Image (cartoon, rainbow, N blue to C red):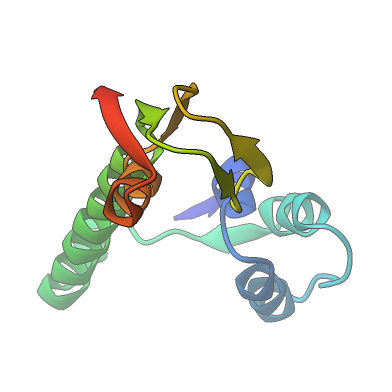
Length: 126
């Protein structure tokens, strides 16, 4: 069965991976990720019918989907923000700002844990 790759999905790939795919498909591998993805998506490729997949291929696809879901869940959890309150004056090197005692601001859960461990801020809202 013939078909086309999804340009939006290709744009989520690393540039090096896109360039390798472009070379395999015989298209120009130079330019931005978007340009390379567009060129790759324009090439008609063989898409295996699900009935043509071997058990090993199906297992590999399931594992890849599970890994992608776990990674997306992990990234989503890392992007959740919590509110912290400065316990004393300090330089927040990540934000490159001086925070005074009592200042409240939002940071990621990971950053809040680092600030709490350093004793410079406490989580006030989750």
